[in-house]
Length: 116
Length: 110
Image 1 (cartoon, each protein chain N blue to C red):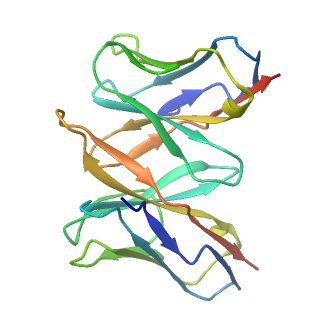
Image 2: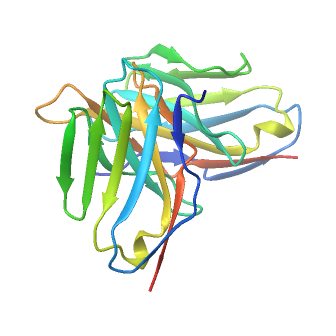
């Protein structure tokens, strides 16, 4: 089964621009979560989508937004980019593990964003 | 107090030894706990999950959970140089929100 895919893998933008990142979950997975990873703050939760609805949101400004499509693919958008938005953006998709009520998250390779 | 705390390391162990990685969490209501391994420049890779008190073994890896002490650990037996990576402890706080520790860097020397 193919893993989580993210595009693009690398991106360079300038301050003030906006960016859209894409994530395709593992086939059959309906939950997609987004995280930001920086050396200073580590891995931080951005938001989670399930069946096209945002169910949970982290503590990020409104410049960070996302959406999910009917095929479970997800996009996240960052508007008015700031230097501090330079990070690895990770997408993770979830499935229910057999025999339990817990859901494990599997990460994609990430999109490395550099804001100049 | 951070929600999930880990010693940043590095934790250095010789090849063949047992590596012990520890994690504490603050939310007593947390239900599920995960260990991820992250190689430099790569994305996190799931190693194990645990949600019941006690031990859970998978190959060379054993996860231990003590909810009363709010403590999760990961033991790696017969450590190999290829195990050298950063190990991230994560707690699911609801609706797929994982809260991560800052990670412990493990170095296994040949």
